Amino acid sequence: SRNMENLRANHFESRDSGLNKNEFNLSAKSGRSVAKGKLRAAKIIRVVTVPPVFAALLTTILYIAMGDAAFANRFHYAEAVFSLSLLPVVPYALCAVIPALKKRGRKFERTVALIFSVTGYLMGAAFAFFGGGVQVEKVMFATYLCSGLLLAILSFIFKYRASGHACGIAGPVAMLTAYLGAAFLPAALLLVPIGISSVRLGRHTVLQVIIGSAVSVISFGAMYLLVPALGL
Image (cartoon, rainbow, N blue to C red; front, side):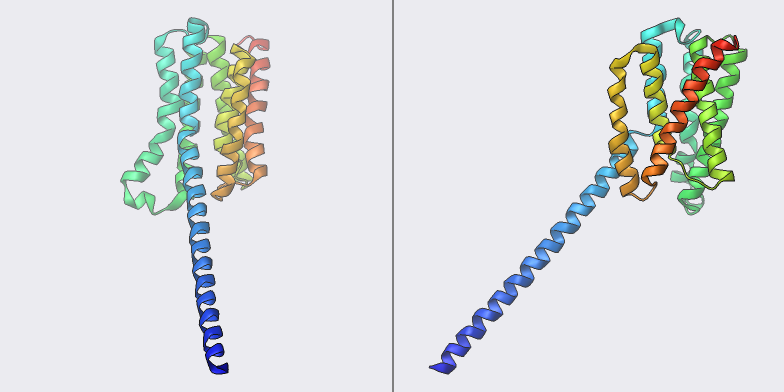
């Protein structure tokens, strides 16, 4: 009788141990699935909020809302879309289709993208200031150029990776709010999920996101005051 009781006890202990192991495995798998889901969501957020997309939205909204007060004509608007939205994505497209470039890694891709972006800003600024552009497009290009140069200085000289992603969102929000009203200010809340996704993917720290945002807002504030004051 005592042996039977011991056998039963061992049976139940073994069964409970098996259940606990199964529960642990299920919990671990669930945790991994949640983590993968969060990373996937973070990647999607970064893709759909890339700065060139926001630059295209900025130029298009300004052109629709303000017309010739934002851009001298349609050609100036088209040039702005090319300089701010199309040219900056060329490095990513090249890295995607050329394996030798892709192998050079994320740092190389980011560096080339920054160079292309600043080149686009220089082209756009030259066209706006010397090609008969109106004040709004001059301020816009001066803001992008100033922001790009500051990010380049931080990156290449001080080796500090301020978030270009956050910079490319905060600036357009500031411009739309200044020119079209406070209705666009809530769009600044997009910086929250963008910042979280950047940190979660290990691209930036919270401070780098904040500094990236500040670079474009401060640049816009300075250009918004300087361009009219200097009669440019």
